[in-house]
Length: 464
Image (cartoon, rainbow, N blue to C red; front, side, top):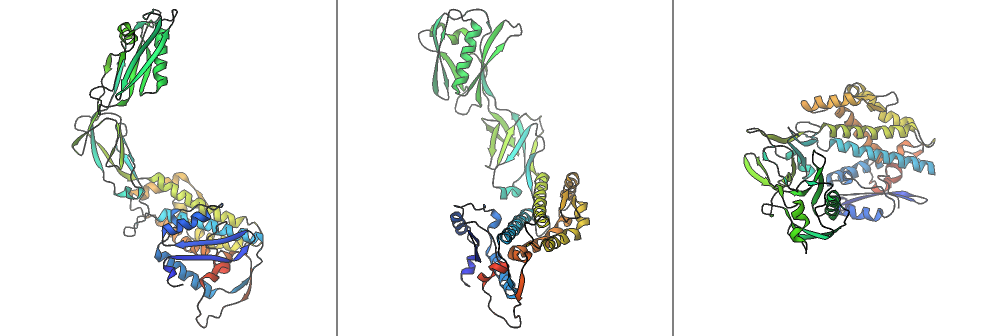
């Protein structure tokens, strides 16, 4: 067993309950664990989280904890009925969820500065001009460098505006008309029929609908003159910048037999109102351009330009504390804690020693009631915790402006974490049972790690 502990520890109950086998796999090789759990997931198993992956040192500590518990465990007599099974599984599952939430609020803790949270958010100090998003690896976010950006020019699209035509007049002769749009080097041909009764307003609507339905990267709008008697067609490219399109993105030409007196010539669809331009900006004083107002920097930032900066001014893109993320983590942690307290308060059967479970958890919360209350985590008489959102958010703001050690929360978390570890190893402690005999501790004996299942096992449940 000694050599295999380095790689994998399997905790398997020595109880097979009707259609249920309870099993837990701990491994220091993430790939091996995922392959094993894949087979289990073919049936309705709960999903793995990244907190279920363990280091070799954690596996070793777990192994020794189980061995120690087995040496000290009496021999119990338990009525293993369906209610007891359900109670033990519920305790185990709720404790496992709470353990993961404890890990979630602790994963970025700085052991040197004792700063508890390092949740960061990439932000702009002037979002009216530039907004920023982080698109890199989340684990690298806290190391993302800040920078200054000056925006000289925004990227623009191409706009063609035709002639204003009298709505009630007839500028095209009845018959078939066609035209061609070249965009991105591709030609698109359009053809339509004008009847004897159709007026300019009808033809403009027909052309606009043809272009919009084609979805070729050009939007068509009908603009009405302020005199309300004339209309024209406006063609707007959805793309911006010049890129490889020389100085224009698209062009419109007449096509077919009627090209000499066609729709493009008659309505002025080839009249360029605005040429496309690239965005021009400087990052830390280095000039750059982009064909779009949305672009990435170093493959980790996504910037969106909205306005130009005043001469000599810049916008700073930097990391700031993500207080909302911290609030959400604390809230989720409290919810997981309340769920296990609620489980103890409303047992499924008389077999659950709910008073002991509530006493073990509640005594910790009540011990740190003053500290928790002061930060907005109000401890109730039943040992549950109610969140005062405004007070908690204020406490988070104050903590992040200082050292961010969260001494009140840390004081509660540490003993709770130890208690949850104990519950995870030995959930059977919280169901009714009769002691048959106590172990002889006067001499050492080699405990079997696989024998922990009934008394200290149920390390995890998977439904096979």
